Length: 114
Image 1 (cartoon, rainbow, N blue to C red):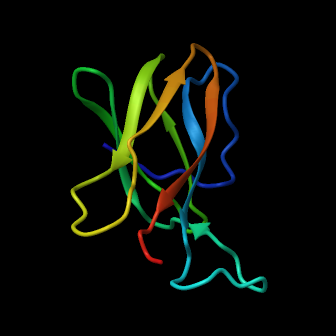
Image 2 (image 1 turned 90 degrees about the vertical axis):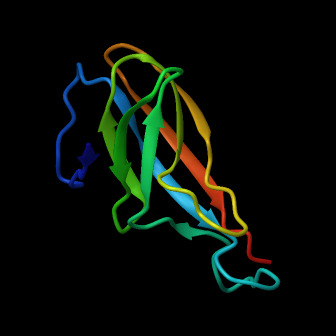
């Protein structure tokens, strides 16, 4: 199940799930320059959400690295969908979701470039 959420949606007060931003850094190889950001939004990246038993949902970040997904309360691991060859780290990120609340997160993936 893939979820695409527009920025204009109004959250329900009883909605339970995860929302946030995923960034990736370093944004470019070589030394970090003062006039350029060290990280950038991880746009249009597909992730899977799994509990201890199996995958329960998936989502794709928007062009600003944002996402919002409804999942039942519980403990989850979120990682990039599909195996990425080569260097870099894309999770897993752990998150606890409580009833009636959207858990806000900000995760940074490591592009592996230096």
